Length: 261
Ligand code: NAP
Image (tube, rainbow, N blue to C red; front, top):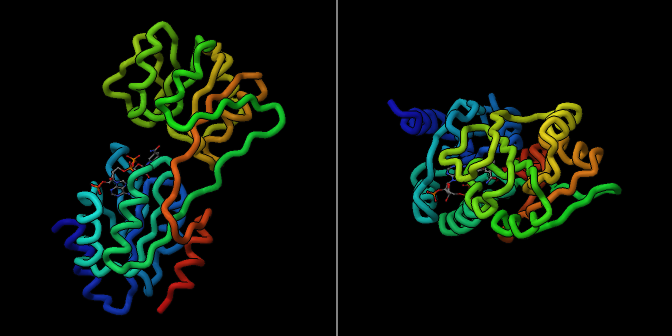
């Protein structure tokens, strides 16, 4: 029996439970799932895109893979009789938030977006902000040894900088790796400031490129860059659709309580 079938059977067995679809892939989504685990008034299914090869289990009911655009998601919301859609996808998951907004509107499902606050520069930071990863290479004319933390699937824009050396950090191996001079470090946060400083100093990094993901787990690289006087090319976040927006897992859980019929 598939996970989806098991989930549907469980829903039928618990007609009074409100059904929550949690769009996951972030620490906030994991925290929401943990908080809601065991509540018999809510039945939560966590959904992953499948971007990470082996996502950590966060809920008893999970599904993996896209829904097939707005129409596919709207059909899922109706078929599974979802009452609330919690969109806790990553601050840089640019498409899914709009699919969630449009599908929830079409299906008449309550929806909330959960997005952690962005990082803000502090004294000593040398940030150069750009609107998209594709704009980062143009800001790297003086850089020679570049620490790239923008994700294994967004390396292509840097292929134009074939004469530079890159340190690439990702959870899964990049495939393909379009950069001729690169060293790949596979690891998943959280990272400490000491380790980040040692990593950057050890590889003689002169510029850090990062997306403004926010959050504690990967903020240490910014402190390390500040300590070492290393400039940061910071990619700004994509915009959010209109509608309710909360910034923490606790706020999301409180928002859910407020939607109780
Ligand atoms: P995206 O551009 O917003 O979404 C691309 C497609 O992936 C969507 O159209 C949807 O496919 C599917 N999708 C996204 N999130 C999903 C979910 N939670 N459950 C089921 N399908 C989902 O997102 P992305 O940038 O490719 O990121 C994919 C996932 O990785 C997201 O869930 C995100 O939270 C996580 N993530 C992304 C980043 C990042 O930097 N982009 C970093 C960490 C984690 P259909 O249209 O077929 O439904």
